[in-house]
Length: 325
Image (cartoon, rainbow, N blue to C red; front, side, top):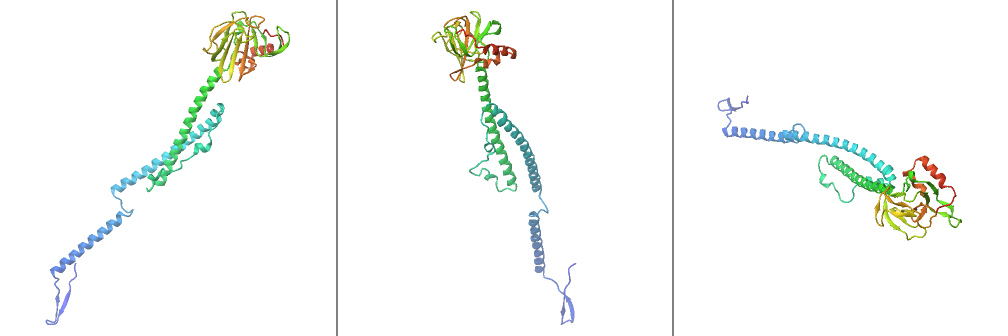
C-alpha cells in the first residue's frame, strides 16, 4: 500500500492531502520498470558467467567434454598395454632374432627417439585440455614410430632367415655316395702314402671306394662351375660352387649327369664313379673348399649319417693308410 502524504494549509488551518501529478506517476513507473529490467539483466549476465546455472547447451558440452576425458584415459591405458607388448617384441628382436642371424641390435635410443624440429602440436594448443591432448598425441606418435622401426626390423630378419635357409641348403652336408653303394671309406683327409710314389704326402680330400658306375650325388645346392677332364690328376671331375665361399669337388668319374652352368639341389644325381685320371682303382675322390682353402669334408656329414655311422667313418678316416690317388 502506497504512502499518503499531506501538507499544512495556513489559510484553512488544516492538513490537506497531496495529490501526485500524473506525469510524476508515470515517471516513477518508468523508473521502476527500467530499474527492474537493468537488475534482471545484470543478474542474468552474472548467472551466465558463473557455475550457479548452466544452459542446456552448456550441460551437453560439459557431458561431451567429460566423455572425451574418459575416452582419453581409456586410450592411454590401451597405449600402455601396447607399449608393454612392444617392449617384449623388441627384447626378443634384439636378444634372440637379431642375435641368431648375426645382425646388430637396434639401439634403445633409436627405438625411443622423439620428434625434433618444428612444433608438431601447435594446432592443439590453447584449449582447456590441451596438455592432456598433446601428451596423448605425442605418446601415440612415438608408439607409431616404434612400430615402424620394429616392422622394418622384422622385414630384415625375414630376409636374413631366407638367406640363412639358403646357406644351410648350400653347405655340402651329405655324403656324395649312398651308404648301401659304398664298399668302404678308403682314405681320409690328412697325411697319407701316395699309391704311385709311396711317398708321404698331404691328401686333401676323402676317397670312397665303390664299383664303377655307382651314382654320385651333389652334397649341397649350387651351380656346376666345372665338368671336364682339364685338371691334372682329377680325371673327369665336377666342381659345384655352393656360394658363401663353399665349393665341392668330385673326381675320377666315369661320366657326367650334369653340365657346366647347371643349377643343382642337394641329393641330385650329378655323375658316376669311375677310375679316370691319377687313380689306382674305381673310387670317388671328394673335396670341400671354403674360401679357396681345402678343408676336411668329414666335418660336414651331419645331413646323412647317424652318430654310429659317423663314428665308424671317423675311425677309418683318421687311419694313416694309402690313398687311391
